[in-house]
Length: 385
Ligand SMILES: *Cc1c(COP(=O)(O)O)cnc(C)c1O
Image (cartoon, rainbow, N blue to C red; front, side, top):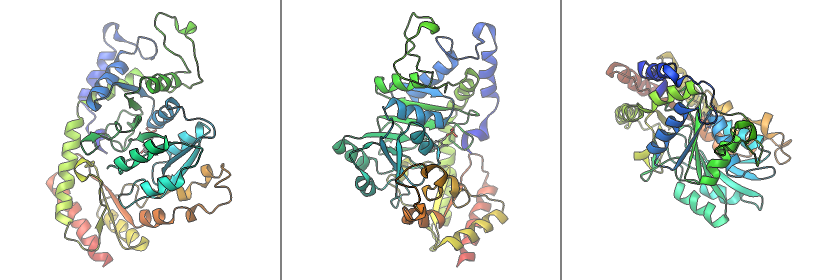
């Protein structure tokens, strides 16, 4: 849950400031968006990038990132078969074709599968870090030699890094979400980051009906060069974001500390396989993933954890929203997937996800709860034999 656990008086103070004196402005455009602007500036500074543009959700963020990068009708966009469905929806909303590919052992885009999926219509690769890093060097090299744009939907990985570089800053453009399950929580909200002025401008325009925000012009006279939507972030949301961003280091270090205690205490179990990492030191603390022998054991394990009062996160219970093999309602629109049994397209990924357990590691865990979770995992592993 991360940031959502800590919402309190600091966020409230930011909101109250909005209502004080002449700063009341709940509608964001033009120059009146001072909380959103401040949030963007602080976020860009935290990430070490030139530009940040805040929008209404993480889905809006990847939508704007793709639009800003010039993704449009007919373009093929290679991405992972394991992700929350939002980036697939965004690719689809732009008229482009989502091309999910199988995972590697780190639960991320397999570079070899990406290479196999490239066609003359491929325009971009969207890497989606799931609380840890994909093999970014390999992906960047493939993109470079094939003239593809590397994009990161880092919604699940704010604060994680790869070889010392923050995730979201490695591709041409990165996006983040502030929904309840993410590192920071603002109610609804998202943000894109980039060092590329053109992508930043185009993404910002897309988020505001195409408005180019040229200085010195009244809004009604502001020109446009491409279509857009209203995906703007409200000042209220930005105020919450400022309060949350000030807590990020605490959130990241607490969850990492909690995860380390838990992982150290269960590392001797020989019938669970921890997921390997491209860069473990840079991984997020709020999630712990391991694999058991098969689907039925994963379900037994999950039931045992639930009995002990611990839910799982996405795996195995929320796979329907996170696995390409069950997205017929969306992928069925495309000729290449129509009438195809989707499960047969990503068999390795399906088996891997269905036999995995993903645990949420909260910020707020006292020693008692940590020990209860450790005990639940140890007894769970005994139960599945
Ligand atoms: C959560 C998430 C999103 C969507 O974010 P919302 O703020 O819920 O719209 C997008 N991409 C990924 C990878 C996510 O996990």
